[in-house]
Length: 304
Image 1 (cartoon, rainbow, N blue to C red):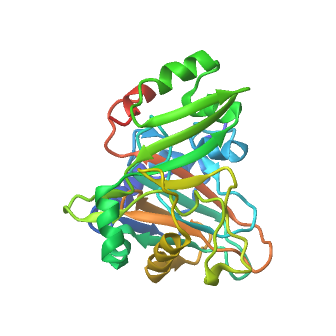
Image 2: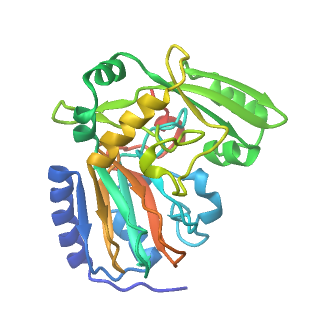
C-alpha cells in the first residue's frame, strides 16, 4: 500500500484561498503543487464530495484511485470549447472541473483554453441571443452498449428503458444495443449574478466544422452527432460560424507547466484544447465534481 504524506494544514489553507478566488472569478490556477494522482484526488475532495464518471473517456479512466479520474485524450487535435456533460440525459451537470498537469507538451500548441460564457453570449448577434433565450436545442447522438452501460451503471436494455422513460425531453430508439438519442436542453445558463452564459456542448457535438480559421486543422467532430433547434431545424453553417467567431474572440489559452492545477466553474467557463504542431507527450489528469451536491446516489443527479 502506498502511503501519502502531505501537510494537511497547508492543503486546507490552499483550499480556502483557491475557493475564494473560484467563487469570485470562476477559475483559479494553483502552480507548483507536487501531487501524484491519489493526492490530487484527495485535494479535489476538499471542494467536492461527489464526482462524475466521464464515460466518453472510459479508455483513459485511471484504474487506481476512486475511478473518477481520467487523462485528457493523448491524441493530437483541436477540441472546441464546451461545458462538460451538458448533452447527457438524466445526469446533473457537474459544476466544477479540475485539470492537473503531470507532463506538459514540449512543443508549441497543446494549450487548454477557457472562454467566459457570459462574455461570449454578449458577443453573439442580438437575433441569435434572442433565439437562444427562447428556444432550446436538441443534441443527436449514437451510443454503443458499453457507453450507456457505463454512463448509467446498468447492464440490460430493460434497465436502460426504465431510466430513459422517466425523462420528458428525450426521444430515442434502441437497435441491436445501440442507443440513438434526440435530447432537448437549454443552450444557456443563468449565473449567480443573474447574467446569462453560453453554456453547452454544441461546438464539439457537430458532424463537421466549416469555418475558414479551422481549415487545415484537425478539429474533433463526430459524424453521428448533430445539433438542431427545438423545432427540428439543423444549425446552419452561418449560425455555427457566428458561435465560433464569438468563441475565438473570448478564448484565452493556458500554457501548461508541470504541476499546474486549474480549477474552474463548468457552467460559467467553456473549456477546450489547441492542437500541437507535432505530437508530444501531454498528460493532464481531469476530474469533474459537484460542489453543491449533498447526495451521492446517481438517481438524485437526474436533471429535474
